[in-house]
Amino acid sequence: MAFLEIVIVTSLALWLIYKWLTIRDDEFKKRNIPYEKPYPVLGNFGNVVMNKKSATKTIVEFYKRNKMHKIVGFFNFRNPVFFINEPELIKKITVKDFDHFPNHTPFINVDGDPLLAGMLNIMKDQRWKDMRNTLTPVFTAAKMRNMFPLMNECFNECIKNLKMQLPNGSCELEMKQFMTKLSNDIIASTAFGISTNSYEDPNNQFYNVGQSITRFRGTQMFKFMISNVAPWILKYLGMKIFDKEKTDYFTRLVIDAMKYREKNNIVRHDMIQLLLEAKKDSAQHWSDEEIVAQCFIFFFAAFENNANLICATSHELMSNPDVQQRLYEECLEIKEELQEQPLSYDIANKMKYMDMVLNETLRKWSIAALTDRVCSKDYKLTDEEDNLVFEFKVGDRVWFPISGLHMDEQHFENPEEYIPERFSDDNKGNIKPFTFIPFGAGPRNCIGNRYALMQAKAMLYYLVINCKLERSENTVKDIFDDMRGFNVSPRGGFWIRFVSRN
Ligand code: HEM
Ligand SMILES: *[C@@H]1O[C@H](CO)[C@@H](O)[C@H](O)[C@H]1NC(C)=O
Ligand SMILES: *[C@@H]1O[C@H](CO)[C@@H](O)[C@H](O)[C@H]1NC(C)=O
Image (cartoon, rainbow, N blue to C red; front, side, top):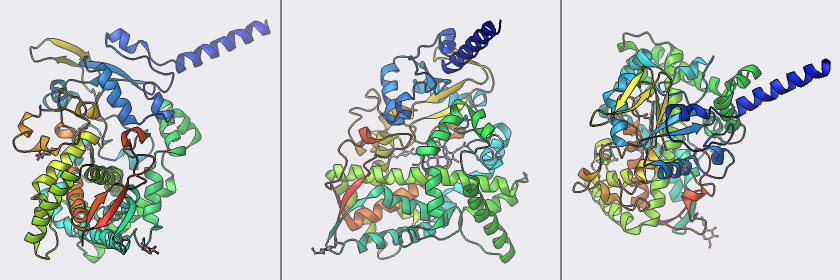
C-alpha cells in the first residue's frame, strides 16, 4: 500500500514539475498565432541566458524569421508575449487605442518594494498619468537649458582627463569605462544633486553602488531571471533584486538633499529641484518616497543608455572616417561661432549633422532593443480595411521589436551600414511612420529623450573637436557578435585610439 502511495505521490510531483517546466506552449496554438518552439523555462531567450547571444541579436533574428506575420508569439522565459511586427498596428496600440494598452509590464518583480513600485515606468493607469503629468515639466527644453551648465562641468572634467592622457599626441581608451564615469558624474549632479568626479576619484561611493546595481550579470542576472520565472522563490527567500543597503544609499541622498534645500533655500538647476517644484505645483500629494523613486528610474534609464549611445556613435565615427570628418567640420563651425563661450543647450541643438548622426546610431544600434505594453481592456485589433486581425484579452502582453524594425531592409536599405544621410531633410520624409522608434511611441514613450540627446550631442562635440577617433589594436571586430545579455555593449569593450588634433 505504502509503495503504491509513494508511486502515486512521486508521479504526481513529477507531473507537476513537468507541467511547470513546460511552458504554456499551447497558448499560441489556442489563439491561432504562429510561434517558435521555446526552450523549457528559458523560452525564446535561451541563447541569451546561456550567454551565446545578446538579447538584441536574438530579437533581430527572431524578427527577421517571423516578420511575414503581423503578430507572432514569443516566450519571454515562461511568459507568452505577442510580438507586433507591423508598424501600422504599433501605431494603433501605442497611440490611437492607447486606452487599452496604457501600461508596461514591470521588467522586475516589484511586490513589496514601494521604491521600485513607485517608478514612473512601473506605475499604472491613473497613478501613472498623474505622475507623468507631474514629471513632464521637468524635461522641457527650458529646463534642459538651465540644466546644461551642470552637465558642462562634467564634460570639462572628462576632457581634462582625456588631455592628460595625450602627452604623446595619442592614447588608447576603452570608451565604455570612460563614458560610464561621465554618465555617472552627470546623473549624480543632475538627478541626485551631488557632485562626483569619477575621473579623479574612480572609487567614489555613488559610482560603486551604481555599477553594482546596473550590472545585469552574475548574481544580479540570476535574481533577475528568477524574478521572471518564479518570483515566489525570491519572496520565499526574502531576497530583493537590489540589495537594500544600496537602494537605501540612494534614498538617503535624495531625501537629505530635499530637506537641506528646503531648509536653506538653496536653488540648483537639477532634477531634485524640479521635482520639489513639481511636487508643490501638483494637486497630488506625492510622498518623499515617490519622488525618490523617480530619481531611481532616471538613474537606471540614463546610466547605461547614455554611455552606450556615446560609445556606439564613437565606434561608428571611428569606422566611418568620412562621417567623422563631416561632423568635425560642423563642430568647427560651432566652435568659431562660440568664440570661447561655453557650449550651450541651444547651440548644441543647432548641429544638424550631429542630429542625423545620433539618429543613425539610434537606428542601427537600437539602444533599447524592444518595448512593451500590456492589455488592460479587451481589444479587437483591426487593420486598415477594418478586418479583424486579432482579439486581445486583458493581461495579454505585447512587444514592439524596435531593433527588428530598425534592421529591416524593407524599411532601411542596407540596414547594416551606417548612413546618417537617411535622416537628411531630403530623405527623412521617406522613413515610414513607426519604423523608427528608438524612444518608443505615444503617450508612454521615453520621457528622457531630450536629456539623452543633449548629453550625447555635447559630449561628442567635445570629443570630435579635440581628437581624431581611430581604430586601435584592441578594437573588437564584430561588435554586434560580441555583445551578450541585455546590454548593448561588447564583452571586449569599445576600444578607440584618440589622436590629438592640436
Ligand atoms: C539613449 C537613451 C535612451 C533610450 C534609447 C531610451 C529608450 C526608452 C524606451 C524605448 C522607452 C519605452 C517607451 C515606450 O514604451 O514607448 C523608455 C521609457 C522611459 N525612459 Fe528612456 N531612453 C533613454 C534615456 C532615458 C533617460 C536619460 C531618461 C531619464 C532621465 C529616461 C527615462 C525614461 C522613463 C522614465 C521611461 C518610462 C516612461 C513611462 O513609463 O511613462 N530614458 N525609454
Ligand atoms: C609617452 O612616451 C614616452 C616615451 O616613449 C613613454 O615613456 C610614456 O609612457 C608615454 N606616455 C603615455 C601617456 O603614453
Ligand atoms: C531624429 O529623430 C527624432 C525622433 O527620435 C526626430 O524628432 C528628429 O527630427 C530626427 N532628426 C532628423 C535630422 O531626422
